Image 1: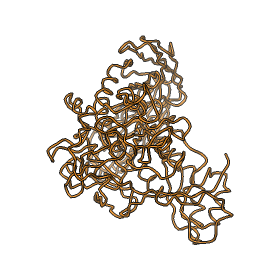
Image 2: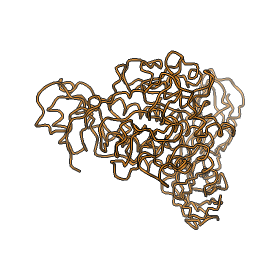
Image 3: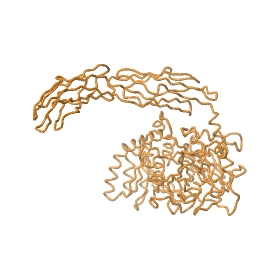
Image 4: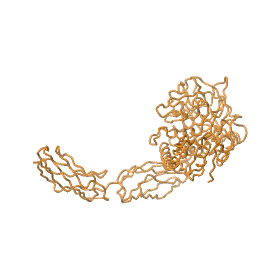
Amino acid sequence: MRRALAIVLLVLLATSPTFPVAAVETGPMTPVIVVLEEQADPTALARGTPGRHGRRAAVERGLRARAGAGQKDLLALLRTRRSQGVVSAVTPLWIMNGVAVTAARRVLAELATRPDVREIRPDLTVTAPALARSAAAPAEPGVARVGAPGLWDLGYRGQGVVVAALDTGVDATHPDLAGRFRTGAHSWFDPNGEHPSTPVDVNGHGTAAMGVMVGGDAGGTAVGMAPDARWIAAKIFNDRGVATATGIHLALQWALDPDGDPATPDGADVVNNSWTGAAAGCSPDFQLDLRALRAAGVLPVFAAGNSGPDPGSVRAPAGDPEAFAVGATDAADVLDPSSGRGPSPCPGATAPALTAPGVNVRTTDLYGLYTVASGTSLSAPHVSGALALLLSAYPDLDADRQAAALRGGAADLGGPGFDDDHGAGRLDVLAAYRWLASAPGFTLAATPTSTTAQAGGSASFTAAVGAMNGFTGEVTLSATGLPAGTTAAWTPPRIEGTGESRLTVTVPPETPPGAYPLTITGSSGDVTHSRQVTLVIAAGDHTLAAAPATLSVPRGGSASSVVSVALTSGPGAGVSLSATSLPSNTTVAFSPNPITAPGASHLTIRTTSSTPRGTFTVVVTGTATPLTRRATITLTVR
């Protein structure tokens, strides 16, 4: 791939053309994003992993591993250059295997020649969009118009779902938002460091967007789509209303894993982005980040922008193939003139994906007040709130299925079918729910839930596929989590419509004993179901014997016995030896320990002058997890 060095900044709402290093004059250090050549495939990392939280953890672990290995040499160089005073800031990014660097001109030229660097991009800046506020207007019926009360009546109000906003912050004291904040140490992030501990919004834009997503009814009307969801937020815009690419990268990876531990499921299930860049055209700046979010099961929702009505006025990154861009309509389903239009400038992308209410929307404002405002910044959170409702009903929807449901349930506007102004139509979350409930699909069951095999032997599971709503598609089966060297064979490997398939697992003789969680996955198009089963590899059974089994020793003396381990079934395994029920002031030693069955160990028992006299039954234990066997020795201390 051709490597280019772009070191200009996107300042406020304007952008300048890129130019090569040779054209740069000596001056202040320049902030850039260095993108590494080797990038993980997040879709492959998530494949076969069941559940929303499981997908996210698998993606994050893989991305962190790729970045940790790939950035090592580059970070070492940057540490050296920093010590030389030609680099002032270095921020590693794992979500897209890149590094945010602020460096002198000659360092950027050096980085551009490295074979491990794919490209160098400007650390662009974005300004917070302004809300078009109305002096007075009736309460916006948008929440009702898109069908949210119908989901509430079914018992789905966003419970169990965490939504995140990347915005100007949130006024967490607002009565419609305060009780919905998740709280805790990892629910607020300010990459600019201005308000590191407590949610703050000096602008109001983020508070308005959050109100549409999860706001309550403290003001007399229900302003939010998913009032039982919990919110977290990243304040990507500083108090002057400016965000940097570095801050946005950090916020996107924070939304996936706020506490930095892939094992804890604390990431956002929905990520709302009521902002756009200023540049026209297709920009790759955040494409890798959005690709990671989608693979982790998070559909990145973006405002289509307010640069309409010209064709192609949707702005990046809303126009990226991985983004789900939302345009704005009024109470009569008429497209707002300012709403960003397609076609998307990015190959393979369609934007906007659909529209949602975005004209005269009543929502939360600063200081516990309310405002009536317009713009696609209010349309996007209608869709994000809708996703929270759908995920309450269908917790394991992947990002593609979420997008399909939203499009499948949309109320068609404009010409029949998809068009570049309205996308699939206006959001209807109740219809999207019904689409999911009635769309052809399949069920997957796996039996038994646990089975045991000897190392060197085999075991089997059965996967059963059932049809829903007339499903006739082909389901491809796979299994992951197998011990190293294990082979798996499906008979048959694919099922048409309904049926069963037998999975035969053959285990190598050297496989360590233990319980191995396996994931059996069935996939058909964009529908995937997974089930967890357990393969237990039994240790070879053994017997334990001590000879002689009767020992006599004077106080202060020692005696010995040979402990023999004999196999009764299965392969040999390591057996750890121990002895208990000894008299006080007595020690034992096994040589060797552990031993491999079959085998023997020399046991020495040493007494002291303080060891009490008497006859004792010493218990010798041999453990090869999960099996434990015992032998006894009668010890007489004279």
